Length: 169
Image 1 (cartoon, rainbow, N blue to C red):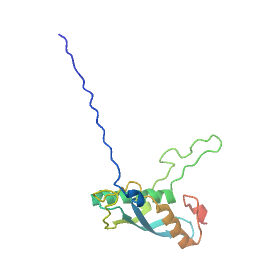
Image 2 (image 1 turned 60 degrees about the horizontal axis):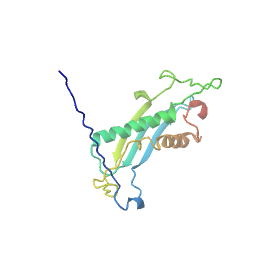
Image 3 (image 1 turned 180 degrees about the vertical axis):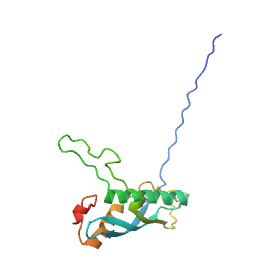
Image 4 (image 1 turned 30 degrees about the vertical axis):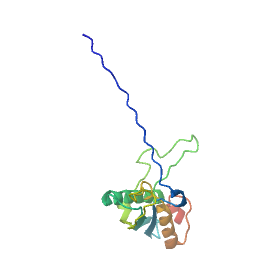
């Protein structure tokens, strides 16, 4: 008995183009970040006590997950600003910080009060729903906001991340 199977190859194609006239506008999400920090004068340790991100991303389809996305990006930015550093061994060119034991990421104790708000905007230029992406906008500007808050607290402008105690003392 011979069983023969026939395979049918299906192909489909869909093209999506932006609406006409969008090249005349900036249709991206945007945000503003506000940081409050405390700096220990004796040790130079920086603590983010409060952080607020206000984001304009058009119509928010799922407020809970959108807020979580922004807060996650904010925590990522706090890590970029204060703890995360890739150290390279100058002798061999290998990373010295290869694991989470060496590469420090923020934990609950490193993060103060976080809040995320969305601007209630109707922007139908990007698409008919007025929806914009918020994938990476949560991290944009977080480290700069923290660096500016550290400058306001200490008078020292740190331009190389992370902002570590040795750069402040």
